[in-house]
Image (cartoon, rainbow, N blue to C red; front, side, top):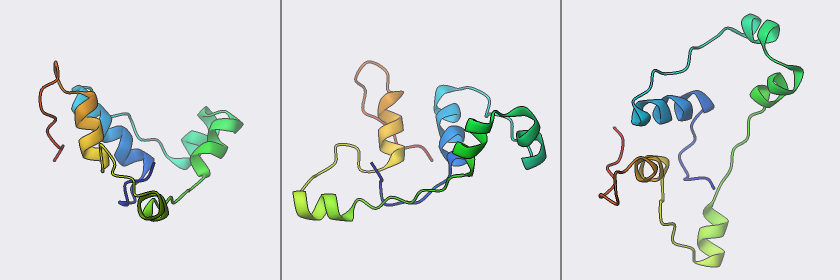
Length: 88
């Protein structure tokens, strides 16, 4: 589901690493990716999809439990039901 705030896969994986207390994944150049990644993974990484959830929210009257990435990820890493804290 889209939260209405476009981002990148790099930003997503960096946020997950930060919340998990792990080092951020290494960045590689396009040339390194072409040499190191499978054809399928290169194709996946080259895709760019923009999703919009306006229609779902409007027509179905949906209220999202976690309306944005920060709140959703914070909940994934919250300890023992503690209140999630948005990243930032």
